[in-house]
Length: 210
Image (cartoon, rainbow, N blue to C red; front, side, top):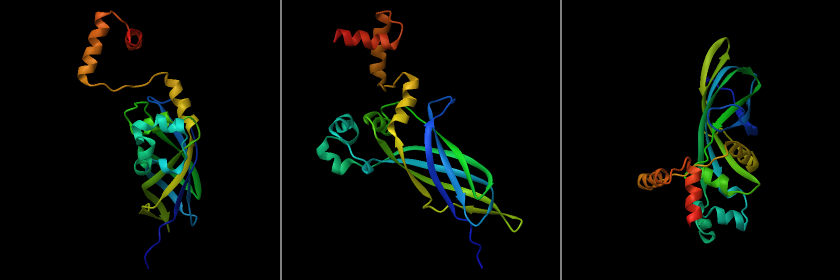
């Protein structure tokens, strides 16, 4: 009779800005539950996080700020879709029944990235997220170590408050702008020619001229 591997259920319970990381990041708390009283030795967990933009409403201001992502309002019925945000992984140590683990997800304020455009464009409310899990479960059965892979439909939904992302980005006090090499070279030449010390000074000078 084929052995049935323990059922794994994962829920996203909360999120907060990571306290001390080399790059901006958010910490998601995952509740991991395994049925049948199985003794889990470890769980190698990977996750793809997607933004399901269709699962929330947008006011006129949101639509104006998200034009670069979804087009003009008349095109939203065709263009509003799921966006890939991030891929991350975490090693869950041994437990029986239930445990909690923190999944750290690096973030960027590069507005060339679709997810950053989406979060930046929202004034308030929640961002609807889909967590799609894959992984390998190592557990004990009858004193023997067994291995099982998570089913493909292991997933969870979570509504992340946009304010959490804004709080994280406010800590950085900067934003990223991607330029072509030619535009950067011209900007750098302007900086040297006017003996400006920083890029903020360059932009302010150009805006003043305009």
